[in-house]
Image 1 (cartoon, rainbow, N blue to C red):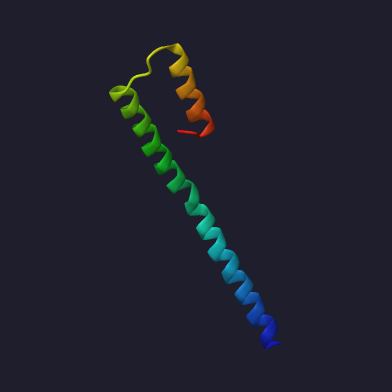
Image 2 (image 1 turned 120 degrees about the vertical axis):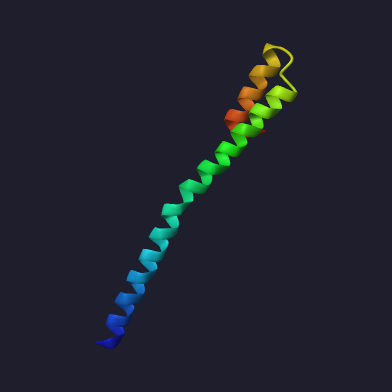
Length: 67
């Protein structure tokens, strides 16, 4: 009886811990995406693309994650 109760409490606590960690993940990704977007703007200001082909290439690289 005690082992069943202990296993239930352990499972419940692990489930709650994993749920809490999963809920925090998106916030950090959003902050990182904002930093990346700001970096891209700075790069475009300091070193603008030199023509339509380079502009299209940068857009394609950023869309596929090959910065």
